[in-house]
Length: 153
Image (tube, rainbow, N blue to C red):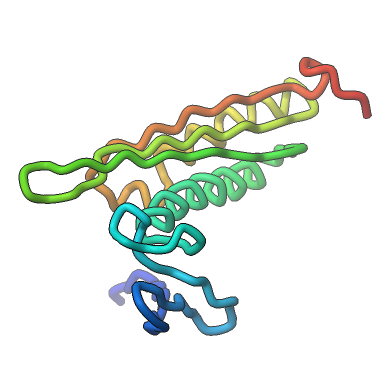
């Protein structure tokens, strides 16, 4: 008997609204206003494909980390990250060449610190979105112990 791999499908739709704006939709989810970046004549108050691209990498790193920290039995007190994507003209093509994700992870004790280190290393390697790209993705974590930053319970 030949085993078939499970296939996951993710569906979205886009509807044009006006000018250079539209709505990004997916069944059961809130719509997102999308449009062109201001650099290309778009409005500054909506999500652009470029922002969503960087955000998808950042979100995938976080969710992969959260999945692995749970599998390791670790606990975190907080996770926040900032990300930046750099795009440039290469010949006549506009391309991303690098995305950097900077997670800040707060843990209670040394045991969870070590588990967080293992989990973020796993996330660096196994994030589905990152693995699908052929650009450089930097993950530069900062993991801190609660006691080490002077927080009181």
